Picture 1 (cartoon, rainbow, N blue to C red):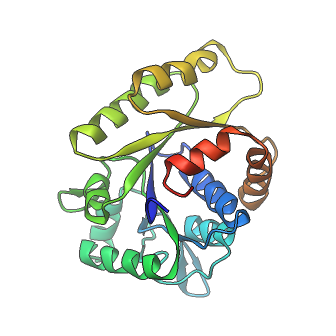
Picture 2: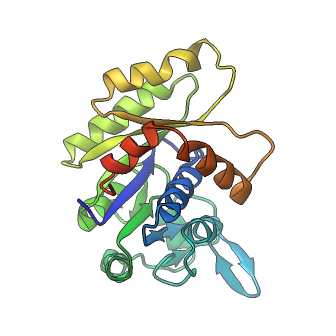
Picture 3: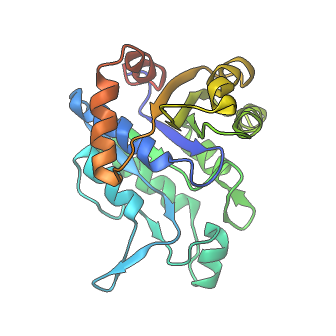
Length: 240
């Protein structure tokens, strides 16, 4: 394998990073890859039996077929706001060295590790340290998840431009939740993102109506497994 992992970020919050990351984990698992997953920092966690649970990490580990442990979700915060603010309010110090150690633990266990960030590149994690700084620390290439609707071209081009300015290796873009009947803005968005972002469009994941979480990942993975372009996605993220 060319690389040991990929970092998945979004152009904004709510674009479906977790669904995309889980779908890719499932695709790789179905291909026989020993894939690990990591959600370094999760805000908005739920409490279950007295323990804070990252639902994002739960979905990722289910898709990869691995147990959910501390290395997969090192920091879990209750408040659904920017991680640095949530951590400050809850008396938690997010230590980047701890995150790196957790990633290295997963790296030793697995052939390939998918790391899903929080929000976008410029989301603050600790003090002045951003998600982009964590990517640099882990030395991972980047896969950008974008939404399909009006405004996405600006957000996606800005994200890819900022990443390159920071010296990050952008492997490509996934447009997620693309509708079966796109409106005018959605119809031309993938083409313009491919043309203007400076990064290849590696996939257009369809919107799956009436399904959530695991059911959505299963349907997406099954559908994408039959598409020739999926081989290109797997190759470009370094897992061919």
